[in-house]
Amino acid sequence: MERKLLTALCQSALDAQIRANVLQRLKAHTFVEPDYEVIYRALAAMPEAESGEIRGWLARAVTRLGYPDIDFDALFSAAPPASVEVAALLERL
Image 1: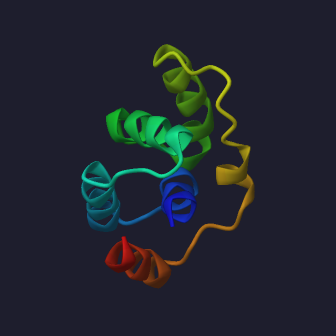
Image 2: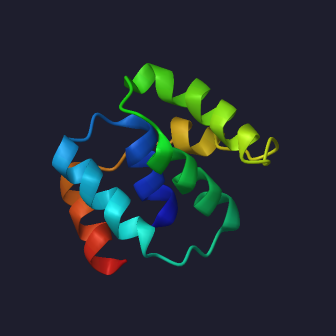
């Protein structure tokens, strides 16, 4: 669930309300995967950006947080979940 929600934040052009909902729900979430928490923290602090800019911004942000070795390639190579699946994932979170 964590990976799919982060993939949606990284790749897709989520509507602003859905994006805000995902960020808010993940804020209170206890991450199973520590790297995903770091990625979430970076994404939550990211200003609004075009999807093509997210990868470079994320790489710089996680490095500034002290985690230059985090591999987030899977978040950009996997197919992003549809909005309906994002809503279902948030309900299960």
